[in-house]
Length: 364
Image (cartoon, rainbow, N blue to C red; front, side, top):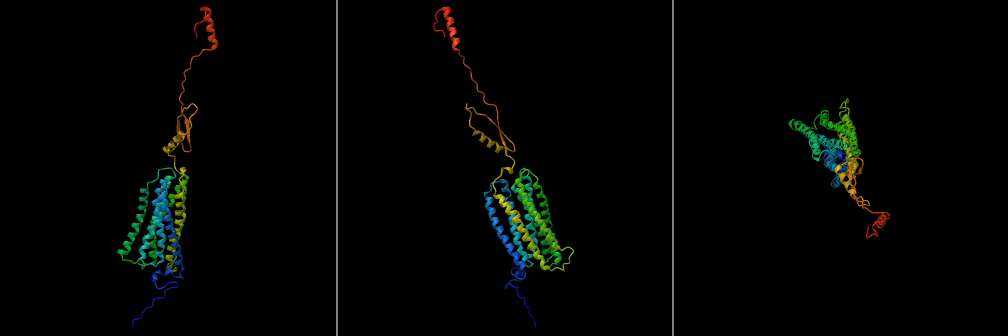
């Protein structure tokens, strides 16, 4: 006689749903509900910031800021994806969530760190007063760095899951965790490279762009601390895997995604949106000689002429600080003197003439 196996009752707070989704509603396992709430708040905040960023990007006039708009747009989308990926770690590991975890985790972080690295490269030129990279070059740089991680992750899934027909949910816990960290090595290299590059943004004459470098530097500093923490805990160096239950693996990655996502929002996206809305500041750029000359000509043409009606030429000498109008030579004023006779001298001539020839007759 066959015996039927009774399924365990759902945990408190959950109804008749798939057991894979128990952590989303289990009151006893509160970490799932807490992570889902914080992740949902981050997703909502990201959507609001994305809408605000789109509006500001349409009205920004600064060409150098406008060049960075696509890069920052990709960064916001990557942050939105990171916060959304948290739900893949709250749902139990299975055939569907396994590939999503192993592929999207590295790809989304590679996209964000590639954007920060590209931004740092561009700031190094701006802070020194050099011509920045074009928008096309910045986009190619971001997509190229991210594509490397895409190839690494897809190759792992194709070889491990498809060819060897290995179910990630049934893989040994130790091997699965090591593979997960191995797939993130390239992401760690990108993060460290971006952090080192951001240090060079503090060396330059134009201080306005150094604030952007500070955003990149601080964001990467906190990200490095987060990644060192979760990798060391995830691998549990020197600790047997049997002493710690496997149920803590998913919360570790979930907390990492939520915390790092909020770090991206607060330390980078919000300040960059504020600076995108800030007005143009000429002191953040090297002087443009053609613009300076045109402004000086307009200023010189409004000067009032002198009493004689003569106009003076203005020499425009533009340096880094001010405009110095210098007088060239004035137009010479030529006057021809007229010969005149003194009245006393005229009378002497008349008397002299009368004494010799008689009364003067019409002598001037």
